[in-house]
Length: 519
Image 1: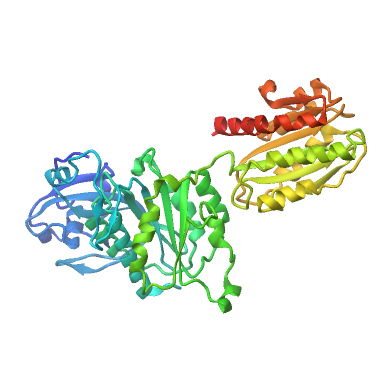
Image 2: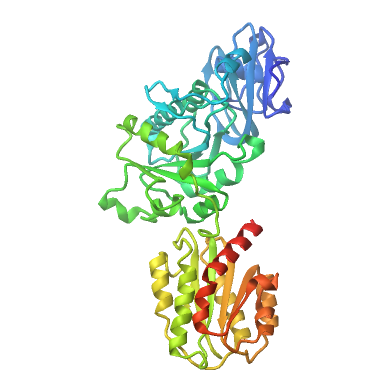
């Protein structure tokens, strides 16, 4: 934005402004005009900008320069009397704004004279390295936490912002409240000085309601991280969701959405449920399911709100460990991988075991979990049998054991019907929230007794990428008909079952290539 303030009148409203951030100059003596102000800290856009600035203490009776930050609309604007200005309550408005004091450009420039920001020291006396991250803090604003602990939470959030040393060229921090409905308090670039962030956090009003953390994560993913609102290209995006006790809703679908969007989710759990409270918790494993990876790094626990100061530094250090911010959607953690396995009589028991070892070796390359890649299998002859679905095994070891234990059916070969069955029973019966790109690997050793072209085309239209792996007497025409385009890179053939092992790495690389191209 321009560093030259735009003169406005006492009657100029937030709704009259065009820019998301704008530097304004208010005239003197606005108080005598009794400007209309709705809200406290965050003001409805129908409010006078200069009136809000006086109410906030940003300018005085003699007027002055201020920065306005536009925000989304909200419900329940609170009234208060401050600095001689009485603001009014308002049930709802379509847009909001906040106001802050203007720091002159020389002061900002002098603190960033070098291209690399030096290690910064917070008021806590701790130092953190240069930390280029964009962070959304999700505050628990439920009735469960209550006003007193909510204030302690705000104090913790303020200390974290100070320690990170929020700055134009350092970390950016915004805040969303989790309650019955989520509410964005401010975005990443609304406040770019530590003291302004602390001031903004202090003014956040307690909402009450349920702890709908899942809904807040979804809201943050969908509305918070966009270039128009200040997110920076190439900077890790982080959600730090603070949960007092346990969430009221499910985090599964929201967590998958965050990972698919490349957002690192940290859960900060405070005052975990006691053993007698566990029966009240909707999902005891919410902690593991919500975080980026279940490896302990993205989980953080504090015993109570009364001993949080010593936890500020370790959490801040985690948030600045950029080389571990790898919670993004990759082929290894976000595919739905189905195997369609020929169990016809021509395969034989021994060769069938070789096929199972081959598909297990392919599955082993992926991060199989309930929050990562998923694996399912169908065996077919003339009939089809769902061996296990994409949601049945939530660890890699479980999935690999299930593949190796599949009992051999023996019978004829109807590959077309089997493809149709797999589409309906593997990929359309996934749990809600199990997003990911769909891949089907067909392994067959012979001629199909039915048509494969129609079912394969239907699978392709459903967005399923099909790889065909043929052995022995499998006709090349059938293999090519089943495979996705380009046929050459989705079709494999070997004369001997022992040759399947040679395809493992090539097939995994092909799946990753397709995944990357599609994303």
